[in-house]
Length: 400
Image (cartoon, rainbow, N blue to C red):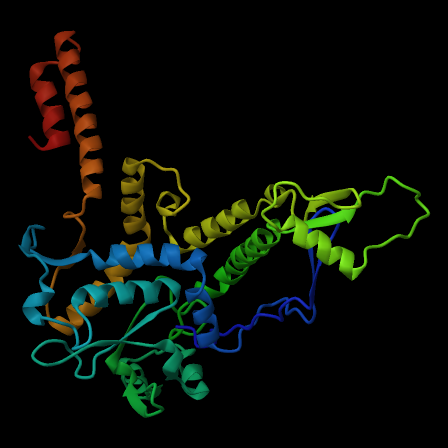
């Protein structure tokens, strides 16, 4: 939970120049090399406006929304599917459990999710909420105290009686006790010496996202200029001539060329040149894709799920499984610890067994099992293995 999450982009180009080859050259002024945004809102809004961020972020949101939090027995058998619904139909009046799970996952992925439980529990009319980090204010003196080691439980309990200030959109403020807030993050806390702070992924995403935005902006300019054509007099005459077109001649030529006539008569031979003749040489789509791959990699989203991927359906399903395993489930483990404290339930686990991508893995597993059994049968046939030993091996592998 990093409260110094603010960055400010530099100024826009002071001027744009197009050289004779159609290449665009920008003149920049007062560019901030550190990309230091001035508020969390500025940084967060910048991320939300970027396709390179929103595409993988939506994948995490969608996958997290499909999770089922089930309760299990001590021998790992399902006791109740979607066990949270027995405690409370909704976490609060504004969100379903599906929306709440996804919100926690996405907030935790890029920084931290602050789960606020006003009455220390959920259910029986008690709600829980995910706070907006932008609206949280923690006094520096309190943060400094969190940087110290708590050697006794009494010191720890005293500290958690302190309060933070939460500002609502209408400007009203509420003092919230720290003990009523549970933190879930994809990254560890205490990494910078302060146990109340979690590392944020936002800062390391700034440069690749800026690069992706630059590629898209350049693509927009290139597409706009690609429609334009320069008409000039063909200089086959005296090189010492400084003959130029007058406004009247320019207007006449432009009117003739833009008309619907098949034949246009002009008194001077003209040469037509496109402003952009080698847009492909800039490789702007490749630049955007490379930046998008960096963002997806940082967030833990498999590249097969990105829009420009050429992966097959089966590989995309495998990619969904890998994203859940590496990006979503680690957050869910921490989230479930919080849910168990707030609900009183025990042995909760996140499950994706109902999702379609499991069919791909089951198919592969069945093919591997078949191959193993065939090899055991061959070994028995060739007297390399006794039937009894073959049965024991199959038992140990498949639990037959």
